[in-house]
Image (cartoon, rainbow, N blue to C red):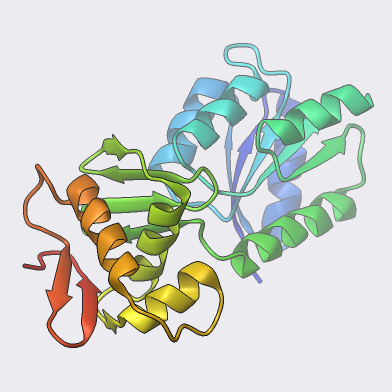
Amino acid sequence: MAMELLLIEDDTALGKAIQKGLTEAGHRCQWVQSGKHGLDEAVSQKFDAVILDLMLPDLPGQEVMRSLRQAGLRTPVLMLTALGSVEDRVHGLQLGADDYLVKPFAFPELVARLQTICRRAYDRPSSTMQVGPLTLDLATRRVTRDNVEITLTPTEFSLLEYLMRYAGQVVTRKMLCEHLWEADWEGVTNVVEVHINRLRNKIDKGFAPPLIQTVRGRGYLLRAGAG
């Protein structure tokens, strides 16, 4: 599978060699020598993976890595560095890198690692859910509407996640009860209405249009432009 790659590497000889090797292997590789330029390219264009040198003169690789993840970019990143200590590798991974390759390295290993992190990213479901102006991040458990952060209790978060998974479909009270308490539900469902009302007050009150709709006799529906 051909990959679309961004290489951020200030070493001219190494950059040329990596770009040439990847191109000859059938991949497309855009090479930049500046951390700031690389960050701009990574944010503005779509790549299958980023190859990021740690020791850059203008903006260190750690800062590029941190900025990419803070911007919400989930593109796989392979870090290259001459620093081979365990602490350096751990620090890079903690910042959000997907893998770490110490210089000097064999070119086939670089390609193999790129293919692995790209495959993992392809197989990994997105941690972000979105319905219209409403966004829910499963990784950070952050919920926003129109870029305004909304604080939810764990039960409200779980309830909203379920409604968003079935966005555009009617979800019954029984389904919600069984999702929230992970058991067959045979009792009254008033408790769900209480949680729905609390959730409405947080994600719909003060915003327009309302997103949560009650479908009489059936349950609830979450959709952009409901109401």
